[in-house]
Image 1 (cartoon, rainbow, N blue to C red):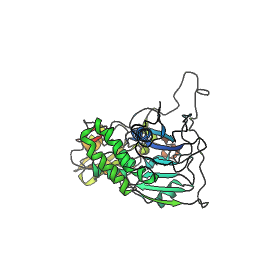
Image 2: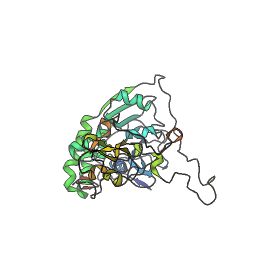
Image 3: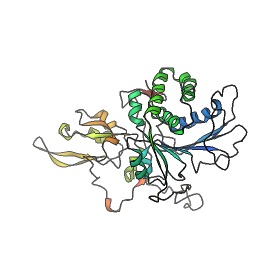
Image 4: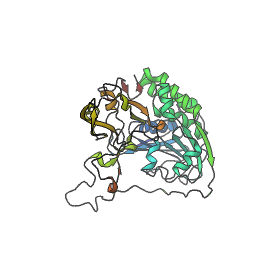
Length: 375
């Protein structure tokens, strides 16, 4: 769905100049994320920001598949001066501003494709810009890093609000006051109880983002943009429309669908009751025969995080606190990572997948949430 908005001269009050444009006269942005982090809304807000507050012509639209938490989402935004119409609605291939909401996506999808030495990249991470440049194998450009997850928790807002503040700072030309006014006029009216928190998240993103510029030095090659195509499509799929994908997520790597949290295992507190295994939808917990309190028993040996999508249902049902919620970025080397004993792992090809339930469902968490953040 395409949303294209012409400038409203009665509301545009912040005069800005676009720092650079492409051959079509557009300044272009691409947002890479997963469902649940608010990139779709962030893209819409940036579209409105350009048209209604900065005096630009603006177009914004998103691309996503199954419309569920954890599945890949892309959002595209174009701005041009009022005298230059936006006449195309294709995906943004060479972004001037690339916003990566979910760092782990880079392991399964070419999220930095099309980025060149003129691109500004903003990443939701607690790592340094230099480390992210190496991890993403970036050809060149300016890398900004902001720990949006931590700042969202601190302000009790959402990741997209923190990222929006970071965008204002990293862009070098978007006034923070214009973004504040935008958020107040839109989210403030829809979720008035969350306005103070959302504005706090915006401010934290603006103040805490840090960047570094990297000139092309031959360290990494430029990655051209290309459309992602499945091995099977409408032209070469078997008759009958057979689904080529595995029926169970047990054979997929779900790490890219997690939203920043994982269950941590405290074996000294575990009573091996099996409630975690019962609540888990994806065969994460690995039980092996052993002895508990002098009797033969199936013992919980750990988790196969390949299958974990971070729903944290196990944390909620554990009666002894042997499973607790933790931020994944603080545990890059997971101590209790045990591979699934029932799979022949030597020949297993993991596929990117995005299955993720409603991790904020009231039936599993004590926190009540809404689209605007914590209630």
